[in-house]
Length: 463
Image 1: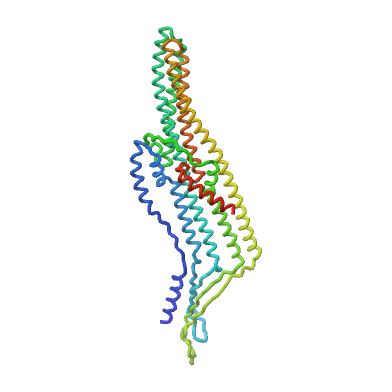
Image 2 (image 1 turned 180 degrees about the horizontal axis):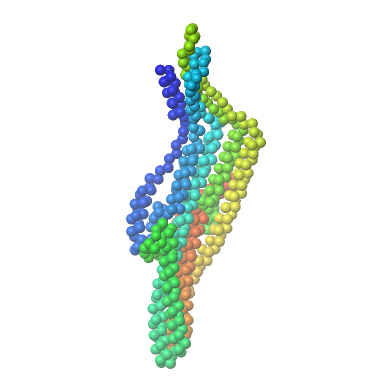
């Protein structure tokens, strides 16, 4: 009975050792998948950017890989925060060792290594920082995919608009060819004018062919980002309204320091190595080992056995490591300190690089906005009026057909340039939002709230 009780105690010790749990649950995953299947059915008709982004969140393999990587680090946290596995050792003696109380048939030892108090906590904080970094990398991957899909969507809008513009101008040039042929018969135009009109029409026909091939290439890119077959059917992209930016350049600089993933990863890395420096201090401290020993003693083969003959032996073990190699321990601390200094320097480098990219994108955004205004408000209205004037003059014999062709070609190029400028504006804005870490077209009320938060964070940093 006594042996059974001891074995139960040993088993209980192994079960009741402390452990930590950290589970990952994404309750919305199945909902997103069902919604994605419904969204895909609409792709053959009209494309909406919001539908593409929802579908990509579920289907894009890069996002899936980042999610699984995050889960890996979550499990690493659970593993790293736990005590080492206990050791159970049993010894059987074919020729029992004879003792005063009787022969020792077998013994069993259960031991548990215990780190110095506080070491597992520090190690857990490092692993927790790794988990946070992995989550930030997941957010970064999602934003990268959002940026790529959005940029392709804006490019697809441009291409489809350009095709429509080219088709309209192709039909117009067909009419101009007929006008030039009639004018040539009436000696109002030269044969050169007819040749020029035909050449211009052929160029537009080539533009249409090129644009349609570009459309297929852009759709293939979108399909691959959605993890679909490159030639899967995609319909016409719905037009997007140009969004105005509600923040200034300096405000965007401040926003990126608070919300941008690369900046946050660098900041979390500094904190991780700060904990690593503290953890390295434990290298000079001992770790402990606790154990429970049980030996089975048989009946002694003696004429007059002692009163406690045959009683089993129970013992408690205590051990500790001896951190005598001070040079190695000192190097561990120096290594962790150098890693922390490097992480701080990398944090500054990343912040400066992002601000430099924001500056370039801001210029590109403002330039695209100026071009949109220029073409919409001035150049295109002027060119269309010039086309009407040139056509009127030509019909009344006051202008040449060559002038009409030239002005018509200019109006065509202006229309394409406007579509190009709008696409560039949209693509640049989503790239800028990725670097800022937030959507930049919020209402003024939201902007004022952001201003207060930015000023508060700036004041905290100054303090």
